[in-house]
Image (cartoon, rainbow, N blue to C red; front, top):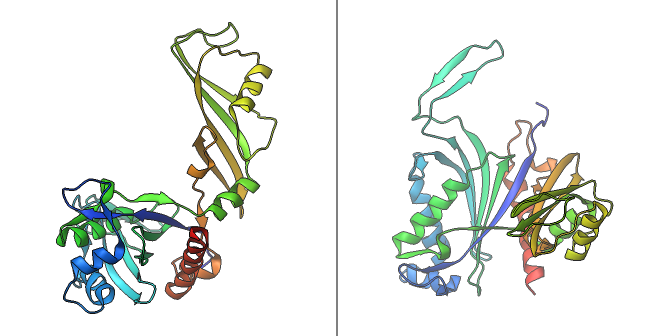
Length: 307
């Protein structure tokens, strides 16, 4: 079968704190493992990893809303760098689905059943830091992110811990941000003006949104001075404070990608991470061992940037 689907990797960070404490009271990953598994020698492999495996218990694991579910097909851990790799077969749950063949024949699937896809993920608890990482492979917008949120929640809650801010945070590396911006051009700037009218060439309102298209420059960062210049070219004068968003567009590995950031804060830009074709089998599924190497490269870059 030809490889027709693109697979992507999403990266998330998280921090751990005791339940019913301030979000500022995050604890070191070492401290979490010590407090959660005081009587276990290998606290990561025999404690944390086994807690996750037990959640599946040879049956379907579901999130609380029962919108997603999956079974554990393959796993591997490394106590040295404290990584736990999983291959799940799962997908959407809690709604009626259909199987449709090439002849257009339809077969109903109960809301209790799942049309499964294979998903690779890695959970990383590096030592001497209060930040953990989750790497989750996805198919375009199809992901088991909510299922992994539930996995982390269940393990932490069992030991009277919780995620700081009760969430994971999407992230990327500085290298990937720079690579995207090298290939990207400014597609559009959206200016938001509040509580002040401006001249006759702009919308006469107490609040307005102005979209600037066909931008004539290619810059990694768009400053307020750049926006003022583009407004002036369009004959628009704004005599009050405003905010703006910049949309970038890039052609990357044969597909078009757009990203929007506030003002010129390119640190908030999180481009897609396209998984290389050698990590994908003929069924368009991730290859477990190849994905381990692919994610390891991202980990090494994170460690390098942290120095």
